[in-house]
Each structure stands twice: as C-alpha cells, then as structure tokens.
Length: 328
Ligand code: SF4
Image 1: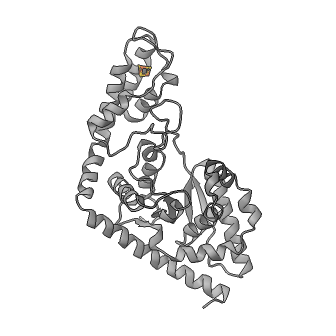
Image 2 (image 1 turned 90 degrees about the vertical axis):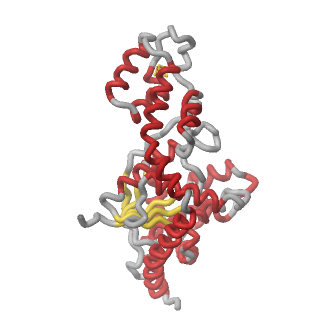
Image 3 (image 1 turned 60 degrees about the horizontal axis):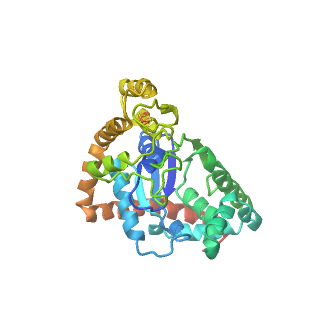
C-alpha cells in the first residue's frame, strides 16, 4: 500500500522509557508506521541545552533505542537515527537562524519557562531550540509532524520559518510541514497527581521485571478518601482505575467500577489485578528488549544505518538550500 507521506518526530534521549512515554508517544510512533514513511530521531544535540554532563548521553540514547525497537519501531521500514549523526542539521540551523527574528524566539513561552527552570544556565541553545527543531523537521522533507495540541505553536513556528526562508531566497527547497493532531494521553504518575516523569520519580519503567513492576504498582496512590477496605471508593478519581481502563478487559473494568463504589473490592486486590494485566501486556516487549540488549553491536548498527539513510535525504535538501542561497 502506498504511504501517505513522511512523518518526522524526535525525542530527547532520556534513557529507559516509562509508561507515560509509552502511552503518550511510542505507541503512536508504532501505529503511524502503518500509513506513513516514518523518520524517528533521538535528539541528542537538543539534550545538550539542559544536561550538565554528557557522561550518560550515549547510554541514554542506547537505552531509549532499545525501548523504541522493542515496542515495535521497525528499522527496516522506518528510519531510526541519532540527531548528531547528521551534521547537516547544524548547518541548516545556522541558515534558518538568519531569517528568524530574535523577538520571536524570546517571546516563546517555552523559552521563558526554561529561563525559570534553569536560571543559572540560560544558554544560546535554549533560545535557538525552535530553530534547530525546525531544521530537524525540514531536513528530511517531512510532510507531517504528529503533535499534541499543546505543541502546535512549535510547528506553526517551523512553518513560518520555512515560509520566510523560501521567500527570502526565492526557492521551494524547504517543505512546510503539516500537523497531525494526535491525542497525547496524559499519564499520571504513581503519586496520583503529577504527570508521570523520571525527574519526579513517579514513573514505572517499561524495562522493569514483572516483580519490580508489581512493587511499583503497589505504591500507587488511590482514592485518597478511601482509608479502609470497608470504605466505599471512587474510581473516577483513582489513577489505578484509569490504568485499568487502558490495560484490562471490559468486564474487569466494569466489575471494579461497580465493586469499588460499594467497598466490594480492596485497593490491594485492585492494584494486583492491574499489575498482572500490565505485566501480561509488557511480556512480549520485555522479551524483545532483552533480545536486542543481548546484541548491542546490532542496535548500534541499526542507528548508524538509520543515520546514513537520513543523511542521504538531508544532503539532497542541503544541495538545494545552498544553491538557492548562492553558496558553494
Ligand atoms: Fe482505586 Fe481500585 Fe481502590 Fe477503587 S478499589 S479506589 S479503583 S485502587
């Protein structure tokens, strides 16, 4: 079946992925492969804007690649690569920066947010982040970028930058990417209140063993008003129930929904049921991950090969870009 176009998406190398990454992005990446040519990038250069030491960068990149591959990113069909393997992105970033008004960058809410988060390290990379992101997208002749509603302004920035570049140099070398709005599930962490994240240590890593996963699930905060097993609970405000709705069969979800409200099921039992279903769901993932992890050289080879394929596209685009700019 002919594919509908090319999709690009990138994510920072955050190491082992967790359930929030899986439900919020990775599953979507896997699904998109059915209809689109997909280019998935581990953006290690972007990570340099915030990391203090690069000691773990390579390991984090490798661990993330393992998770993506195990989850179903197919390197024979899609391009899976590491951003720094294609140095042309840095060149395009520089050219695009020449058509980007400074005020537009300083006004972006994400930049202001970063200044708040790391006032001791407000580097140029933070400011130029959207320009590098635009270069990432357009360097691979991307038609579509899958984003959640909250990221849409970034893609609008990319589209405007492409228009400015093409207009200034009288070219059509760069393609304006379209947005594919995806429903990004907000996955709440085991604390029951904040978005699941490694930095808050409220996450469940996909690569945990079944026992470790169960232990983590047992730590999940439930309906805070339910103090004893004999108290009726409210599944509508319970994160364990939200997870059941994703990983459990309908009959079990319905049963919990009914029984919890009349104290017919205890939270420990409810959590163990969820842990069992989650472990069952992740079983094939874990087997695949262990298999890839036992062949690290092949995983590196997949990334190197992906980089070569991505670079071939990038070099074509850069030829057109330089020609339009009258550069050698
Ligand atoms: Fe939540 Fe389940 Fe406890 Fe009800 S029984 S409060 S759904 S963990």
